[in-house]
Image 1 (cartoon, rainbow, N blue to C red):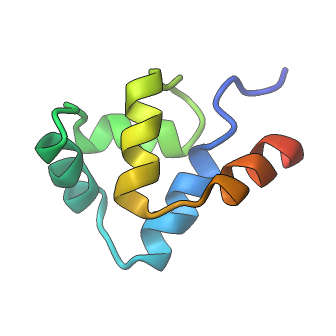
Image 2 (image 1 turned 90 degrees about the horizontal axis):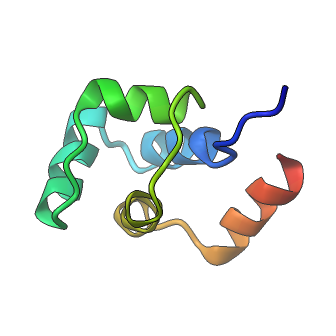
Length: 77
């Protein structure tokens, strides 16, 4: 069965590349009005939790992910 969360690995790679902890990402999401704790983010990164559209947009912004990177993740999915 394929995951319904194709962006989890991209979020994890981007977070690590940016030198951010999961807690730091959660704090930045909170500043954008998105409530997500570290455990939830870990589940998202591990493709064990689906994302709401606003969560996805906020994560893309917080992590500085480009549209091209998102498209590539979907194609590789």
